[in-house]
Every structure is written in C-alpha cells, then in structure tokens.
Amino acid sequence: MLKKLAMFLSILLPWPARRRLLERQFGYSIHPTSQIGFAWICPRRLIMEENSRIGHLTFCKNIDLLYLGAHAIIGQLNWITGFPSGSSRHFAHQPDRRPELILGAHAGISSRHLIDCTARVRIGAFATIAGFGSQFVTH
Image (cartoon, rainbow, N blue to C red):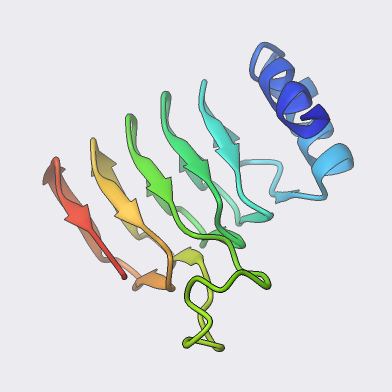
C-alpha cells in the first residue's frame, strides 16, 4: 500500500525529482537522458537505457522487468500487465516463466496496445508494434 501511495505521489512531481525518487525509493535504473510521462509504471525492476521514453497514460504493473534499450519508445495509452512470479499455484507448471517486457535498441510500441507479459515478451532492435489496439497474450 505504501509503495502504491509513493508511486502515485511521484506522478505529480516534476520529472527531475520524480527520477530521483524512482531511482532511490524503488531501485530503478533510469539513464539521465530517458523520460517517463504522466504514467503508472510499477514493475519490480525498471531499466531504461539512454534516450528511451515512456509516454503519457501508459500503465505497467505485475511484471518482474521492464527493460528499454537505447532510444526505445513506449508510446501513450498502453496497458502492460502480467501475472507476477512467485510461489502461486498459477503457472506452477511453468517454472522458467519470466514476466518481462524487453525492448531492444530503437524498438517501439506505438499507442493503445494491450501487452500481457505473463511470460517474456521481447521486441527486437529496430522493431515496432505499430497501429493501435493490438493485443499480445502470453498465456
């Protein structure tokens, strides 16, 4: 509950202060040239390489890793979720399952997509999920 409150309050901060809070409080790794818009980004681990961006109103929760390579972009209004790893009986038959979204260098996700990361989703370098309203389901 406290983590959710801190995340909500961080959204209201100017970007430089928000970056410091996300790095110190949540242990995220955000390159100084990277940015997150007015968005709820709450994976267990976040790694953003140089010049990567996450657009406004994007929602990300219940995944172990959100990784954006150099110059990778997640546009606005995307919904990124998964079933978190752990000791739950759900997905117990998949012991190597990793709830992760990994974008390679210069990769992109445009706008209004639903991405289920119950298992790893990897978007390779220079690849783009374009259009809008696409759904990717991994379970």
